[in-house]
Length: 313
Ligand SMILES: Nc1ncnc2c1ncn2[C@@H]1O[C@H](COP(=O)(O)OP(=O)(O)OP(=O)(O)O)[C@@H](O)[C@H]1O
Ligand SMILES: [Mg+2]
Image (cartoon, rainbow, N blue to C red):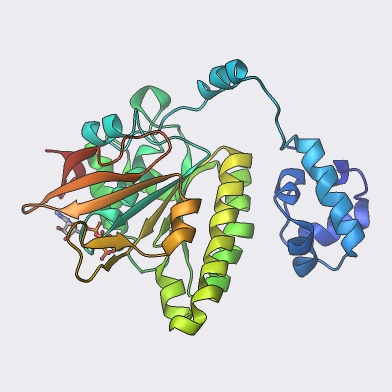
């Protein structure tokens, strides 16, 4: 891993200043816009502009390639299994890295259960559909359950205590906390603890609680966009997998879909693959493609939630 002083224009003093504020490496520095850097570290705008640009050059964030080379490169991006054949097939082999997946659905539709299962499957070896990585679970709803993880581990023949050590849980209480956990803590965990999967369960609840009423809507959407943009930057620069959960709103007097995901256009634009979870009979649930650049609209998969996690029907 490169050290901060390798960035042209960053001397020992600046490197110390940056790392005292939690900036880990040139790659981490390259994620920041100059304005964001100035908020965190005392620098002139000119200097912030110069060192962020130098960091981007050093880690080569901008890649120009032919479509042929791009297709070759995609083969190095393994799909992450969800542990459910029907869902993996729906997603064309599992979850792809470098993008954001949204799981939206009403209470009890299985969003948290799928997150728990992914926190286990990411740890599986490549030949079992995992990537041998650790997980970061950002829990905004007090939903994380070590017991559920342990039950799922048994199904995948993983030692629960070892698997739990590979799941880093961050509990956040407000939007600012969530932003810091993504901009700073997540990078530390990716760089130092081999975190390959970031889960945010849920992305929306803190915004709905903190920005109340119509007059706060524009501010809420702007802040939501900010955090999603950071997640996307991290996904791209570090090649990690990102899944966020979202609540749904009732659509009154609607003849078609009666529920739609919260977060409006901002969620719609920022999330690459949008999946809607629906309750069916008893433990059965349906996952349906709501919007995706690659997956067919309304294609669906059926799964069930059991004591052992999320399974095929
Ligand atoms: N140990 C278990 N055994 C069997 N089913 C379980 C178990 N634990 C949870 N479930 C099922 O999972 C459902 C909850 O799913 P989940 O927690 O994923 O919902 P969610 O979509 O995250 O909802 P919310 O919006 O409230 O967060 C419960 O309704 C129950 O049917
Ligand atoms: Mg939940």
